[in-house]
Length: 329
Figure 1: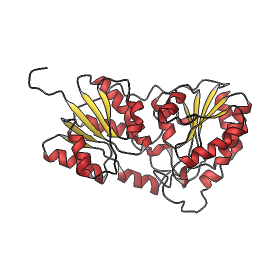
Figure 2: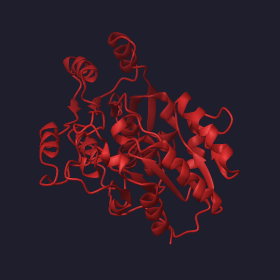
Figure 3: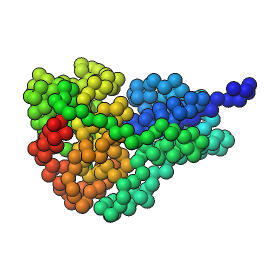
Figure 4: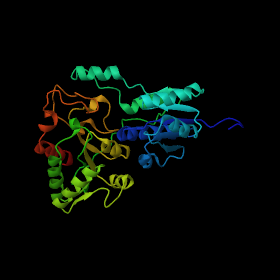
């Protein structure tokens, strides 16, 4: 590089949620590999740093989104970006990217497709699948001049036939509309353990871990993925060993997808066609009831307008276990 010419450095903003950051890790790894002369930094949750490892020109800058904007901006300026990609497009990131723009830094922001989302919720059956979020991230980077031709979804993650030796189960989701009754997933875990599989349970919150710890007493083949006091990095190490992950529409689906692990996912108020399906996952691995009111929410946060949450409550243990067995055989 000529003297005085700066190495291009793209600062990407994505402060939450964990699943979205996991999707961003896939896109940024591909883009960094396809553009080896460019530095890429993701400003986001530091706990997800292991997902960004292995690519020399890609790093993560831990950001505490609860800090004042001036403090966050000060830390972002220290990486001296030549370009800023806002992969979040919320009020906080709007002010931050605007501050860079006013200082002459080229900026591009995520287009969320809100109009298409509203149309999907209004007429679910008649609306085609939305642009996947991973593709929206890639388009944001392309507007800055950085393409990632290796980012192709045609290579679907394969699911080998059973019997499976190691199975991950992530039985929880943040919102009620995405949460299958945990006691039913507990029965799935026991049934798989009784067939000889080692079952590893994944969940982040203290209450979730306490509940799953009780499940480990059901069978000697059921374990907490993080073990005794292990953190996210320990869980990622276990994910790498799995034959399959069974999860809700949740962050663990995206963690497994980012690591090339096949996922069988359970869907309720949300829907794979809304753009948040697992990266390179076979659409046939989505377990869901055919209801004309689905999806009623893009993220699962809206209360069920019928008040029944039938999309989850009417999905029986027998139906899900039958699906899992069919995928195994």
